[in-house]
Length: 402
Image 1 (cartoon, rainbow, N blue to C red):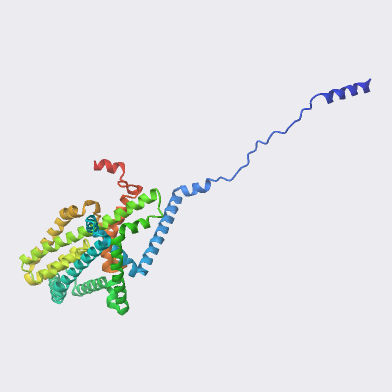
Image 2: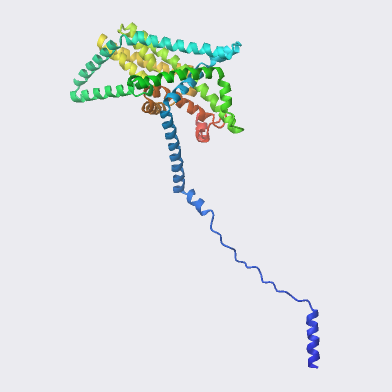
């Protein structure tokens, strides 16, 4: 009985479905390293400072490399830059000739000959009015400076004679280095090799300027070929802004310089100050260096008037210079050049300092138009009327402006 019972129980067990117990999946979650921990380290204050510092270092290194490369290729870089500035300055004349169905090559030749005639006329005027009387002008200015230092010594808080002599020597040394530090200017005096570099640069300037005048739009379209979409639109805005800025700045500066020279020349003639014409030419040339040039020219004219006509005439000359500069800055310059090209005085001083250190007089002359072009590019970076994000006015500034 027992055996038959066990046998029946075994059959029932075999006929019943077998329940398979599957172990539950482990609820443990694999712990992966926190991928955001590194990003959090760069997101805090020190990380932000480190990121910005690294960006600044990269920008400075790139800028230093660019400057070093341009200084090493001055004979090529300076003529190309000058050719671009001259082509931008005389672009309206070129467009007018082409609008009259003048062939591009003939229009380029006409404009190029006009540019050469203008510079030849300026060079002849400088040689005729300044060079022949430069010794007398220098002696009059030195005599005026000596007379001014003698008067300063009579003041109760006057510096000693040794200090004045030291200051005079430092000023003369600075002006000498300033006048001879240019890569172009100092080379012509240094020797035959530098004269050859100057002539090479001048010939290259003429050739490049001719092709810019003749095929400027085609050359620009070739430069734009690698760009597409928004990048191409931005490059086109940058090109248009650069050409307009260079042209407007040079034409406006020449007009303002001529107005300054004529106004100061008339004042000197009325006061019967000798060497009025050379002083007027010097004023015109130095006016191409903003801020500093007008001050130097005014001081030179006042020193000559001090020696030849006395204190009253010198003070009147100073008043005339100040009046002409005020009329230029508040009326003539905004009308001729437009307020869009107006840079802050601090920006101008910094640009002049950097340009003078890098390339002497030529750098001082080119620094401000380059700074104006850079600011113009910033203002159209993201659109015709939409500057780069960091240069856009805030809501508070817009409300204050309204």
